[in-house]
Length: 143
Image (cartoon, rainbow, N blue to C red; front, side, top):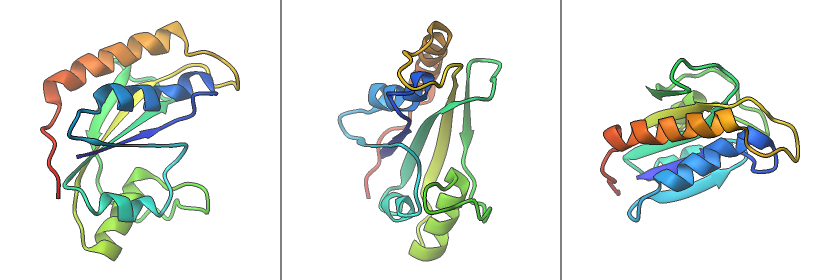
């Protein structure tokens, strides 16, 4: 299993992705921390059966987090700097003939300024998300 944490520890609640990914990574899971997804990550995920993408979210989720299956989408969102999880999975399917099961965990954040610490509310959302993930955590599967 691969866990991809998206974030930036220098930008307040944007650190949530890395913090959650590190907390969720198990001995048998591979951990990949990035500032943003790039098209090259399509090749990376092609070598795994299961992938969890963890990121901070500006969206307000009722529970403080959102967990969903990622479905491939040719959304043409990629630039030289960033690609959506859905487009990354589409590129993985198309170019590498690989079909990993990908889930996305988003944790609601509130403060994003450079040099800020994580907010108390975001820390509470992180704890809720981690508790939820304990109940659904898949067993690592390697290819």
